[in-house]
Image (cartoon, rainbow over all chains, first blue to last red; front, side, top):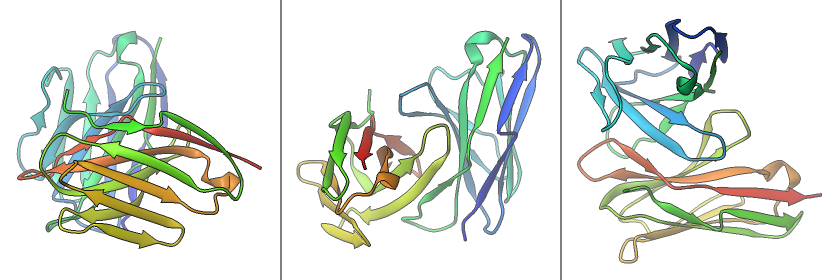
Length: 116
Length: 111
């Protein structure tokens, strides 16, 4: 159980393109989903927390107009990188958390974004 | 930065040996979790230990938590080549559901 599907796994596109990444919890309801960014050989940095039906909470230094997050249902959150540039190239990972205290986060397999 | 720290940053051992990784954190926590990440993949949840627990076992994994020292350790016994991965601790900050990840330990188990 507790499977999170993230799609696409890899994107290569030109500078200026907007890219949408989907994160789905397949077998549980995720009241909260998280979006992380990971640089090579580094740890995960939280970008934003999204709760179903409400606006995402962004971490300091993360541009909310650049990284649009939508959490329209209890099983789906999307991250759209708008007008992507080479510096946005990174590994983006989502996670989903079920209801209740002391729950683990379950992670998607990540999306490798490469902007040319 | 509130980011937790792990040591060692990298660890190379022979198959069959035990591997110990340590994690230190800075805030009050609800729980601490350990994750494994294979190269270029997402994270796999290994074990969760609550703030009122001191030790937890799962198969070949043993986790300890010392909230007075704000530290945790992960022990992998009888390591296998397939255990080669990066291991991260993550703390759930009290009053939130947010995780703060440690810097990670890259474990290499040699066959």
